[in-house]
Amino acid sequence: MKSRRLLLVGTTITMAVTLSTLAVVTSQAQTATAPSAKGNTFRTPWGEPDLQGIWSGDTLTPLQRPARFADKPVLTEAEAAKVEGEVHARPGRDDRSARGTEKDVAGAYNEHWLPPAQRLSDRRTGLIVDPADGKIPAMTPEATKRTREYREYLAALLQGTSGGRPGPISPRRNEPPPIYNTERMNRSDGPEDRATMERCFGATMPNYGAIYRIVQSPKQVAIYHDSGQGQGFVRVVPVDGSPHTSPKVRFLHGEGRGRWEGDTLVVDITNFSMESDFQGSRENLHLVERFTRTAENRIDYRVTVEDPTTWTRPWTFEVPWAKQPDRMNQVYESNCHEGNFGLLGMLANTRAAEQLFKEGKGPDPALQDNATGGGGGGIGREP
Image (cartoon, rainbow, N blue to C red; front, side, top):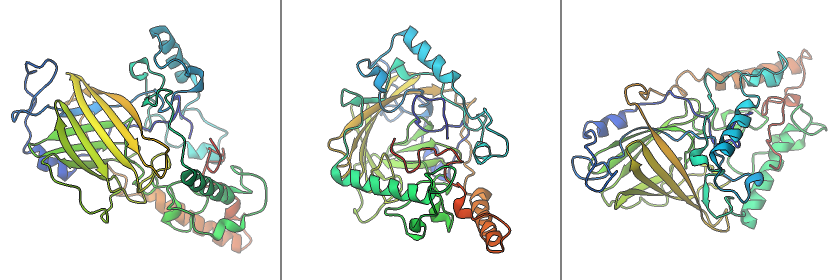
């Protein structure tokens, strides 16, 4: 999938979800009061910093600093305007490929559904603030091996198709993936062969470049994430000092436990499941989020990422969130699971294609690219 962003940081739409869990917390919450004597800090009626509202973290700034800006973490206004213009001039999802091709069909969701971001965050060239070079630290040997084996497996399933390397159908087509599959693999034997996004749980933590709604009560903070195309999810974070549950209990988006450090909400997240996948990290991912409201219309969202089985050191990125008008940007119900005929169609289409091939009436579906839309897309290839 092509994007106008410097680097893919996540697709965002302006429609999202209001879940019943939020309603429970909303009934206890109050609107923000005027700023306290501490400056820009807004307070709830019970005296805690008020983070409530609808916020946008949408940004053109990539996670990692591009090589062309290796020694320039922040651009001038003129430089930022030039970069933004370059990005917006690139072909996007509204540009059609040759009609009727796999790649053309893959672009069915145009920019009405997946609008591109408009601005760089604070004119920065990368979201990562630590290490100083703006890059994700090197992977451990274990993670490098794990990632390489997974990419090789995905590439093998594409062999002989328009999106893969030349050659016959790979014998690996009948093998299970080396790790839990989260990508679009070129096979549709069952739903587990399809990407988590196609199965309606593709949004991961840490979740950035999206729309958020925060609601607070004296003992909980609820955060709704409107991420991707109907992939929204809600987190209810206790801030009452309760401990994490047993490491045996795992969650797709991890388990968060919050505390207040001055005017900053700090959320410690552990207990991820194997279905979680962030930059190659799975169940050993550990996050520390920091939410600081620095002005009426701004939250500084800062995340420290750690997994000693994946990276050689922890790293941190930061994204500013902009306050949205509450009445003009209501958060709506997610609709990915209900009526997900897309996933059903992928599986049914493959069964029909297999039957036609068996009867000698159609091509072998194993030679069709059902992973990248005919363009390779980086699946199974080194970045």
